[in-house]
Length: 355
Image 1: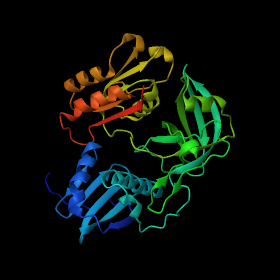
Image 2 (image 1 turned 180 degrees about the vertical axis):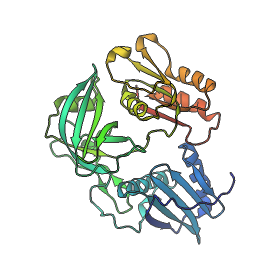
Image 3 (image 1 turned 120 degrees about the horizontal axis):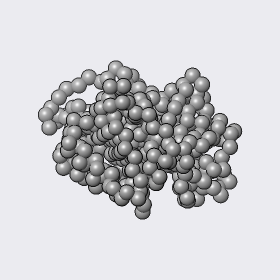
């Protein structure tokens, strides 16, 4: 990898640092770079004494050699994103060096034991049908300013239905999020912000209804005035492109719809959408004129993965956005990685799993 220099992005003004005195920089350098490449994060500096990784829209990780150890500097634009980057680093460090993440101590003054800054307490305002298989939930919160186009996903935090005294996540001494376990564990499915009104502090999202789903069970029993906790925003924003290929099943229709309606008017490409009843599912989709929209039914037995690979070969200059069941995602991701694409050319995510 070629060596480059960089300047911290001025749009990431918040910073915090931590030192790991017992972990040599050289030990962590290669795994850090490999992990960044695996997650398609740009490595904008890689030298014998420093590595800098960008998390688009969120901030930077900057690792430098310091004596026999290393210093980690995290930069972000907003407090919740600073927390999420610290949390993410603690998780990855635990994978690389089990137990070491517990020694992390950051220079900022996050309150130990408090609710993480990326957890928002919202109040349900309304629940209305969308098409044949979705319910749209509108919630209100004190501050949703961090929900922007560079991060359109978030998680619902749902206790078990029979849990009368739920526990919520808290900030640990090492800056990571501690989640309740056992009977107190939370179901944390990912959803997409469909519309947001920052002035009113209101956001809407759509839940696909399916038998046995905990989110389905929650929304069918929810009513205006209920409290709902959410965590986010998470990754996966609006691709900054005017050439795109989109492949999505029902679970990803809200995200695909959000992207399509936000793209530049002169965008070109295709969207292939899979639903039990195809277009008859009634989910509203609005796309720029230059993007063809094709609906498939499950009965067609066409593989979204195979279709995406064919289209990608024909239009390699188009951004590939793909979200559906885990097995198809794994197959597509493996095929794409063989081409060793540059970071930021695709978004490939599992929205659910049959297993």
